[in-house]
Length: 417
Image (tube, rainbow, N blue to C red; front, side, top):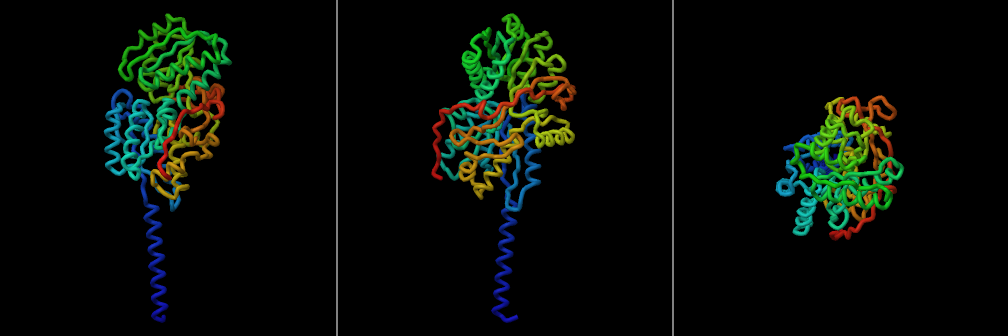
């Protein structure tokens, strides 16, 4: 070969090699996701279950990653359910160069994380973090305290109460309601919304009682159950979660309180085991998906996960969160938090639930909401049980995004694009 030809071939070879190396480097990029939630104490069962299911979703997503797609790695941090400890571990995640965070166990923690992430972005927008909220429901997170860096992939409590009170318009047998919630911002918001929406849609319903408990502190719920029974209530609306809900329903079962319970979290790990046959046609859950809903793609994931782990797959929000995050990175052609946040807001995505949208005005996902009613496995609509109890949640109603959507007061402050 002529020397000049040899040099051209060599340079071409080097370019191809460099390009291949660059693609390999890009393909090997790993984006770490800090999972900050309750991994110790009385609510640890919920946090650990969520972590396990997030890892399952990430594992499946990584297996389908294309050559140009980043892969994800979940890094757990025990926030212990407190705002202070959660912000401490958020700093630890930042120090490890982690720029994506997910959390869902408690709106008090969520507000603290939003505040800390906002302050960090104000100090250095190039060191910003994106917060992927998979279940903290306080409406303030997408209203007066909304943040460009925060995205909620789960319905707010007001969206759930909007859906529930619409349903109660069709239930004339509901006449007396007792509101029972944990004593923090989320529980207070649920009680407030319940009163307001019932007054608007069912003014004939009497709210016969309202009570609050300190979160994760109560062991004996018998006095509360006795109070509800003496009130004459035929229905309880509760946003309690974790062991607070499980112990409450156990106390109601032991008392023989045969009224209706509309919950937001009866699918939480450990709660179905407390209900058994007593809960049939009494306990309902308003949530973003259920294993007996007609959604084949998520049903396949749930069945496979239970066969592998023995646990029920309930955190469908992780599916939307991680799949939409990858789609945003593909759209942005970057893993830079600011570029990805801009790509994520306003995104419409074809999920197993149908088309969902991350509303750009407040970063609240617009998606269907489901009402599940506890019923015996094998009865109409109950193909799968929960926690091997022989009972599961029948998909009673599915509300479209348009039916549960809420207005927002969010005034979004955005960094320069």
